Amino acid sequence: MNHWIIAPVVLPAVLAPFIIMVIRFHLDLQRIFSIAGTGLLVVISLVLMGQASGGTIEVYELGDWPAPFGIVLVLDRLSALMCLLTAVLAFFVLLYAVGSGWDTRGWHFHALFQFQLMGVMGAFLTGDAFNLFVFFEVLLIASYGLMIHSGGPVRLRAGLQYVIYNLLGSTLFLFALGTLYAVTGTLNMADLAVRVAELPPDQSALLRVGAVLLLLVFCIKAAVLPLHFWLPAAYANAPAPVAALFAIMTKVGAYSILRMYTLVFGPNLTVTEGLISTWLLPAAVITLAVGCIGVLGARRVGRLAAFGAIGSMGTLLIAISVFTAAGSGAALYYLVHSTLATAMLFLVADMVIERRGNDHIACDMRMPQNGLVAAFFFAAAIAMAGMPPLSGFLGKLLVLDATRDAPGWSWIWATILFTSLVMIVGLARAGSLLFWKPFDPSLRETRSDEPEDGDEDAGVVEDAIDTTPQPVAALPFVATGGLLAGLIALTVLAGPAMDYANATAQQLYVPQGYIGAVLGEGSE
Image (cartoon, rainbow, N blue to C red; front, side):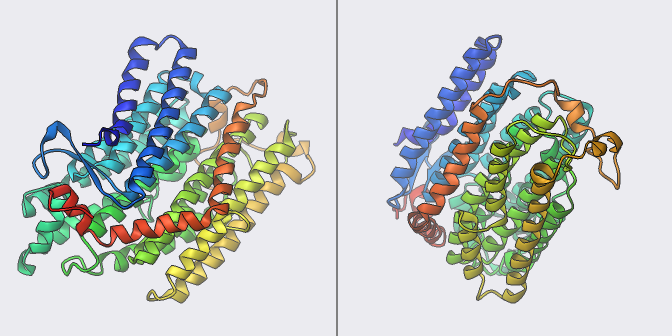
């Protein structure tokens, strides 16, 4: 049995209590252990990806109890890709948090950060639907603490909203799992796939209810309209490194849709036929439109990045909802791109806020290091909008190509192309006001910090950060540059990246290999 598979879960699970119980009063030691542990997580994830790249599906049986009776972790191409993406993102985000001093503004940042990684890694590796729920709760509990890190009334209010929406999602998740267990008698994903396929059509009504509930849960996690209301305020008001790490959390929802609706509720299953294409595709198109319009209308840097995250999820879910191997391959390439681009935009937004002392999109204050921050914003804007030469352009081309045979493809293409233009205009407007328009001190004197036009987030910066000028550290620029380097590498290595994404999609749409590996009936 390959013990490397459980290492991404065990490492942060051991490191988090060690930090909180042994070195909680020694910040330097917390930073050293947290960065070293996350760096080791990157190495472990690279090893796992190398093992999975050949197409072999490996299973780790906890306590040596075989499936479906025991808890299993499963390593295939998809889980290996998601683990590596999470580890790389977490490493650069952690460097930014240390360099910018965000980890000093509240208690237990590094312990909560490691618990968050434990939950995310477990969600990607588990082969059991109930343990997917368990790891969801682990990462959500940690995210609650990270969300309100450094305090402030606005952040606490946004955190409460975040908690309520996610508790609703967790409740629906339990209802869905209870329904599926009542029908099939199992929650192991591979065993579920076998039993669902054998279920007579006249007994499938309750199964379809469970499938719909699961889709609702995953859509809440992925911030699909109209279930996206929790995201703008939560992400805009969260500490910047936390919001950047949260870029992977919406992808947990997208991953879960891919995993469950190719393995358990496959495209050839009669009882759930049309569920994804009928409901998810229109919702994804509207999500993309709303996200890009939100970028155009944003008056604050944090909300600009938050709506950008919503728009990128819309594009990603359009590719997933086509429910073909080509669509899923394009979705996986775009998933990696959008995660890095979204995280980079949040970090650049924090650079702007830290230097200006507020997050208003207006030319009301001169900014130190204006040129360097502007260059990073320009790169992040290009990536988010899907303009050449970065990987977002290639990702959107792949999505367009994958949807050309889909019903209503003309509307999908028109939406993607038009919203790309809207995103470009919105980001260009923000960049011009923040970096290039001549400084007008009268705007700062006359501007009111009271909420206007339903903007409930006014004053978040004043509540959350110390606006006293601080020495400029190099580490935040290194961390942001690392994310940019990842986007450049994804562009330069687009061929190998797409080969891996397409091979992953092919593996997803031939679930017999996964089922055989987990249940001991042969492997791929």
